[in-house]
Length: 321
Image 1: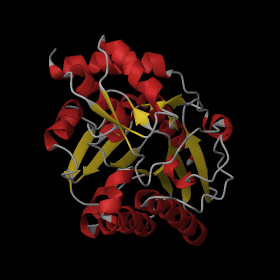
Image 2 (image 1 turned 180 degrees about the horizontal axis):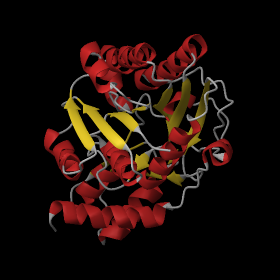
Image 3 (image 1 turned 45 degrees about the vertical axis):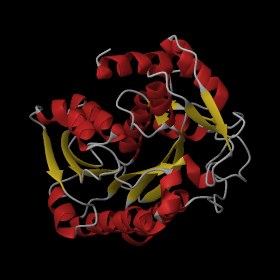
Image 4 (image 1 turned 30 degrees about the horizontal axis):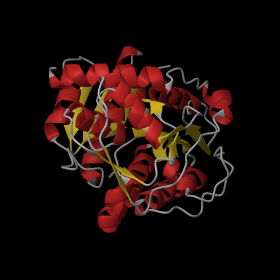
């Protein structure tokens, strides 16, 4: 089934990849993005370039907190995939008010506009950070997730709760997807794999916070997109519901091993500065993806070794070297 779909955060890393896949699947796609200055607008414009040439893609520059803009984007929409957010754990410690405004108020505005427009099908981009440091590994969706350790994580958990509330009150069918450390071509430059690749490539030292034993479940963007597409299909039935799904690789890698892997792919020896752990960073993430496999047909295929080689190849092309 296809139709008209609104993707918020369409010019971002995950959003632009998702729009590619939706257009390839026959959807008419409306993209909404405000080009937040969190990172260079030129990077987002480059991600949008091929989308803008597609006949079934239209783009609106605007803020998810602007009711008139959101209402206009929702006209004749069948589904909303809400990915727009103020991103980043560490930056959220510096400006928690902004994170609350964009991620909590913005999500409320999207859900309320859906209610008014009669759009019942919603996919919400959440984060593995909601699990905090107290959840048993591997993280399962049934875990309480009531002790997030950063403002960013708290705003994502709040977004999930808002989705559940709107589903209960207004009959929406919402899939909330907890993304686990997404990477791949077009990744945001502030994220670890992109930043480490740039620094090692330029023979610059990189900062390793902690002793290198922190572990992450890094998930390739193509696998995330496949999971989002499965979630869009999950919203088709008429029955109201709100459910949470993990999208990860279900495998972890230590930080020091990740740095070595990137260095090997680049053919360079990383220069590492070891610093104290940062507040807000969880020690380990690892997804239990049994539920997403069963309900969404989720089946991650790209292992971290192959994914890093692909990322380094993309990075070199992107940099022109």
